[in-house]
Image (cartoon, rainbow, N blue to C red; front, side, top):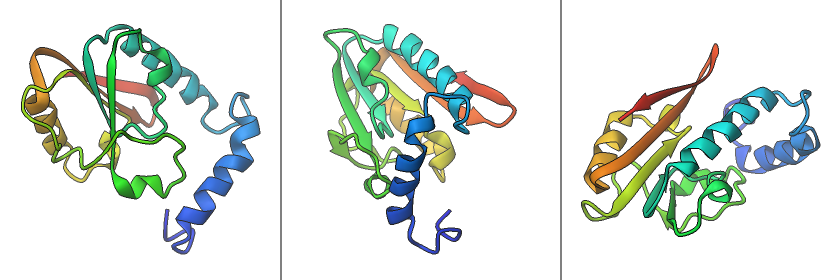
Length: 154
């Protein structure tokens, strides 16, 4: 995308988001249908979560509004993604492929719509397993062309 924008992605991406914002909740927005599916997905996932949660690649933290009371939420994001105009502020900045947490630190770990942005997603899977307590829920989703969302249980 940076080649298309001539290296001005940090300036243009937020402007594009603002221009499309009024259309976000209408079928005229290019991601309207996928967004509806994503909201349903996040509602379902949030209903399964309890305890301490690590949300890898939290972005604007869309999962937070659906979480039940009592969940200790920790959002982690990669510093360069902040320049893309995300409003949400991660509690921790770091790399999902090298998590800055001790082993067995979380009751649940999510990696939602992040895999396609990682050069080595298997490293993130390994890290999810390392920081997850035994019996911990690990949830991953990935947007796939041709189908709404494909999920892999871990």
